[in-house]
Length: 406
Image (tube, rainbow, N blue to C red):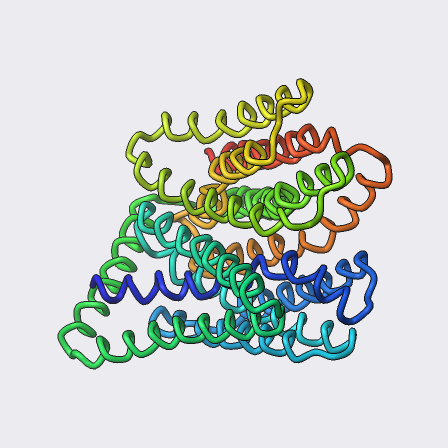
């Protein structure tokens, strides 16, 4: 089973490779294609549109457990196609077209990864999601290093895409090889069958009449609504935590955009570390919840204090980006794991397909928010705005947990 879980981890890893690339290459694209910097909003909107459409379509797809990972790797292939297409673009509308393909691939891969992960044990789910952000870290590092060495964003994108598809190919081929073993296939089928039997047994042990079932369904829909709101705010928080500190540096110190890549590295590393840490402390139960829900506001308030005292250096900003993203890293896997044993799998998959769509859809609003913040001269308060967004996430999750209680 080790190699089976390794293929899942590699799929998560490959999916995350292009997540942070646009923020790094856009200043270079803008210069080469003579496109204004604010036009990045349109490119991000196309990525979000492709991702949302893919999530909705993927969620309606009739799926089986043994096909989810293969479909996820199909999404990764579309991501690679979008990345390579961006590198070959010569006109702005070409960028929009390939951005849509990139977003569509991210949506497909993200949805089926959630489907693949949801049947696993909680700790394993957090470990797998750490691979997504590790992939973002590696992809960002590869892209920035390639651009520094070769001086070409097109070549950087091509190397990024080729590395991504190579990892996906390793996952796919490894999966095909291990599934040729008949004993392994039988063991895997028995494992999934046992999980379904245990779920049905527990479901049948909880006697529910029609009236109770209707109430449970209403509670579940409320939880879905709240979790989707939390996913939307979480997407805003993660991107804003990368972009807003850079906007503050540019506005108040006259710095260049060079720190954006480092911000992406810090954020992606923090998200991966947060998932890994939460997987380790998960058996602590309520203590883990307290650590998770208090680390975020404490970190942001300390950062705002240092900013007020003019003591916040570039390296400290990177350190706080790492810490705040580590605090929110486990939140999305926690939302994916929200389930009610008394409901059918259809209800579960409805939540799975909606969560990534809201997270990806949040990309549309981040750039306009950042631009309006800069125009209003409010960049020194970016941490307080992050605190408000973080508070919204925690409130949605708190109300979601309450909605699930009988």
